Length: 347
Image (cartoon, rainbow, N blue to C red; front, side):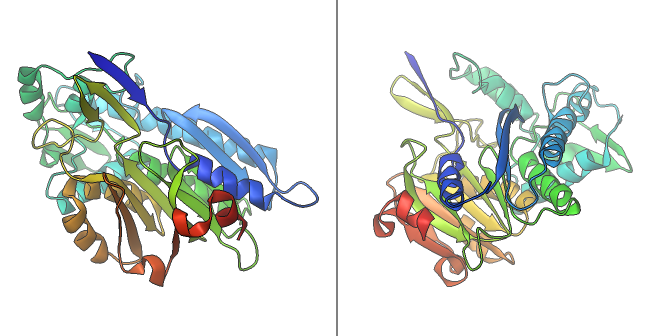
């Protein structure tokens, strides 16, 4: 028997708490809009330059990138590459940049994170109304198509040397998009904003003078408004990968959407979530997925080797593991020490 259990992406509610707190007072403190795109709810809030046309253009930009990077939208760059039967496909410069970024994190993870996992993700289809464990032979066949080294980029063309391979940018595209939205807003004079692309969060500026934004790290498998801790950040990206975002339970066993490309099945380690804090969201996005697949010890060592990057790991038994900069450079308060989300957001 299969029981489908799904959660919306993490962090959105905790950010909403910070926004509510920031809105206390006279006047019109911010404008905000939400649109379903990139297969998730995307919310952008502007705090200083409250121009509705800028807000609309920012969300339109998300739609534009969705039309380039989507696996399923006919005519997108990724759709065209995946259905070219090994022929070279001319792609937009942004598409090539995201693919290159994905290849980078495929390399540093030793192939545990691999953007050619598309045949596997399609087979598992966690977004269907009735997901289930695929046939073992089909998983074995899909595994043969996974190898990021089969991606060939020459100028403005992309070729898959294995015609059965499929690129899936789901693990690294939203971070790139969040950075481009940030750049767009900055070009329009926005200095204080929150960009939340379904758990890929970028905060611009700060909540106020000497007051950072407060971003909650969701407690795994709890309601979205239950945080295990709070990050106090300004001008940062906060990205989380977790096993509670998309999953199902079949015959008493949990299956979640973060797949191990060496086995074809969900990653098997003690991690429940990985949160990356960095200056750029593109790096945090691919890194959070790669770290999850590496496991806590190897992932912690990897993050510590990277500049201006920190991490919060939450294990399945709710232990919190952090890199040295969490607490030293970036304030992090555990929920049981913060007195609840409202008081944390209100500090």
